[in-house]
Length: 291
Length: 267
Image (cartoon, rainbow over all chains, first blue to last red; front, side, top):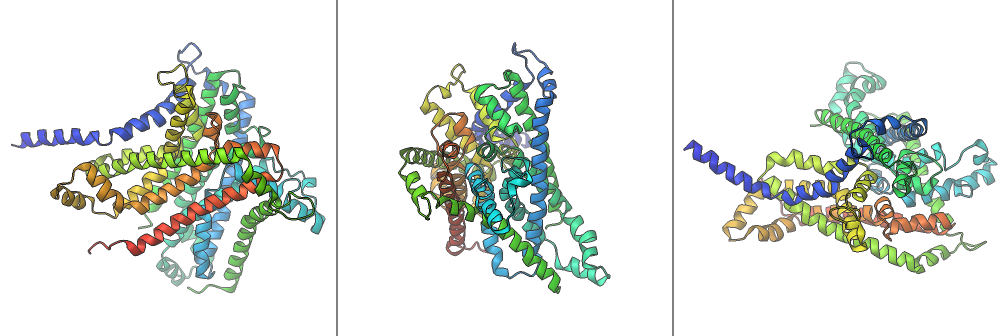
């Protein structure tokens, strides 16, 4: 009796499995196999044998420099994005601002976090480029020559400042629900035990928010690390960050070694994987408090 | 809890700084886009862009790509999400993990894989013809949209009692296809529309796939204009921002409409 039941269950299960087959096939063809192909290529020499030489070649100074500047830009834009986004979210949620500004800010954050790529680069060139609005206004009104300070929109700080346009809104979108999850009672309980506002933040709120903050930081890091279009439209190929180098490599084998190109891509996957893994892990941890 | 004057004051300062940072690039771009004619503000840059035949071609090409991506995405994701919720709840973490992968693997790596896997000397030479490349691009865009589309649809399904709906339809003699298109789909329209508008916003200005697969899309066109012209890129940026804004506005609109039209589930 019980035996026939398990057999029956097994057959229905095998049929049910077919329902997701189209999706799995699609994912295999257009997501998993292409990625695996690159990863495998990173560990092969031109003859198709296994080698670690491509990975070792990533540690050549020129390529290492690319990774380093990419990581620095991503760290800077993620850190500044986290801080600025957090401050704005705190001001809006807890800072005593009128309630009606919250909805437009969230809508704008949704728009701005999706406004990346080529047009974003144009916007910042028109604003902070050599004849951009802010550059000209600073010069004409305050007599301040922005480009005299060594600033250039096509540089590290220019790119970081541009990335913040989608990093800050993303932070606001993710951290606002977490701030909403801070219960009023916690603050009251802390106040009753004699905690100052600063002590409440340091010993209650920030420890609770910590996983969410760290997780979002990792997400923002990955977000800017993989961005190609903004950087390419902004700097052309004058700033040699990893995605730009990979773009040039795919277009015309600038490294003169296809397999080094696969290794370069593999390195990118590795870094975004670690960052996203951290994000997902931290998100799972922070949800414990947010029930 | 009382909020002190100092807190309120610093909140306003932070907000104003934030508004300044986000408004200046938009104002700057808009102002710049009006400066094409010397000595006066005019819409000349917009006129030049909108009457450029390559703008019209690339823009309609990208709109087409976006629409096809949305159709393929819906056909692929709605049945899958429905089926997983109904019959394969244990598969959910796996399917969800796969849909999150496009956020982990940079788009440039995925397209690199396409070029390797589907080149002219491969088993499926999609990049050999422009039609094949377009198919590949729609599949690629669908992959990029997976995380957003799947999450939107899955959230929409969560609020439905799928098992009861399916059973009721089966008792009335509906087959699986009928259930999917006439029972499930109408109930998740809002979720699908939200996913669709987001997909549209992503695909319309997408650059990496189109540039590396060498297709005449709006993203590479914008880049080309940016490299060669002065005032037109600013006009393009304003147009692109308007499109993104419109898509997000439509998402809000349909979500708000849903709150009014949806029949409340019995408690």
